[in-house]
Image (tube, rainbow, N blue to C red; front, side, top):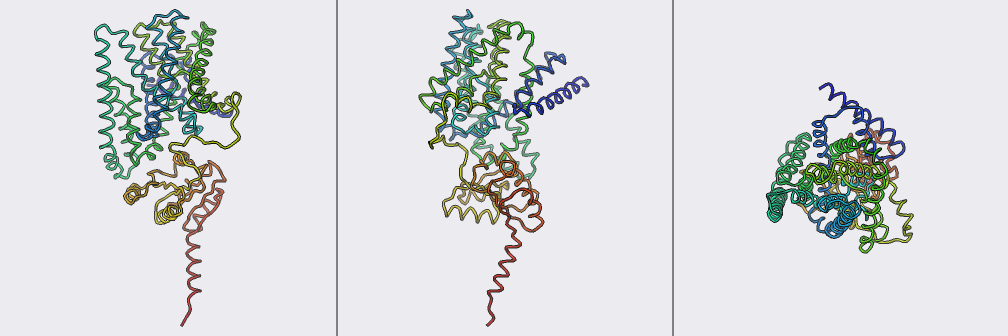
Length: 538
């Protein structure tokens, strides 16, 4: 027990020191976590059991990531993204898979089965790193972000037939047709359980849970939903993350979507940190030294080939800049490839040396990815200059531009929404009281969302930086201060109008560069004085 606590303290200490240092140079925390894993592995002797335990824990980082991505992509949204998922994604996986298979077989003399496994594993990209960085940079709904997400979704679906392929190559008992039929049946059952049952049960379940008025119980129910969905998918032979993604898509159709997303972000990021630490633990310095030039050559060749393949077909569907940025974003090899290599090695399809070389190549490609994504605009500018003229942009699937954000749906919020609707202005209402949200929806209000405006991630999701105005119309002084602090952290020049009850509340936010503070007591006093002066005695 003491040994485990020592390792935990050392890991957190190393991670904190490295990330604080790297952040001064604007280097993503992903890199810090990976180096933490590498250093920790060299200091402590992790047994096989400890590594397996950590890898299982880390997998839930991807599970929660895929769940929150599922929240972004409802069934309706997926229909609008069918080209990105099923055309761009299918072309990427098939073309990259066949090219790498050909190279593995003809240039490295690997057996056909081994070449196929390696070839299609290399076609996969890193969902965890790409989506984390795109989220941090608020680029997930940009033109290239939308393409990248669509391809990543297809890749995650493609993992299932890839794992099935290994079973087919190593199975002596089952025929190919039996395996395919059983997988298809399992897929239908999983979808029916998670989608249809979830659709009719999940909203009633959360209505019941939220009636407790306890944030702890609500968060516990969310985690139960995520983990249960993941386990259901795993029981039928699919990945944990696929089950979480379908669960997220199901909840995306409900009014709880934004509240759940905001509440889960801290847990998701912590578990993703653990995942990246375990990636760092897989780096073997002796293998890097022994096969250094081979690994570097493979790293350069694989990333270049993937980028060229993606750009070659994407340029026929989207603008050149979008095509090159999408290609750069997905040119690395992903975490699911590590799982495929591990399974292939345990089944004797690839040798120990090949497995280690592939692991090192994949990990290094993942290390490079945040640097590429952070400089993607500059790299794209080298190849294709950004147009100076106005042009149509890809529509943000859940984003807003030039809109008004109303925080709170009390009497003032209702009146504001009514006025804005009459003037045909674009607005959104953020309200954390489920009863007010339900009542508004029943009365035909389509622009209200169950979300807590005091959470920074909620304001970021509703694009507060590009809003015309943010109107804070709530009564809680503490929440007013928190909302205003979060708005101010995005941009001090955001047009913010805050309603306060008295001078004390006005004073509490005076230091936050709020554009307009409306003191209701002063206004009421002025109106009363005006009405009194207008009175005439007969």
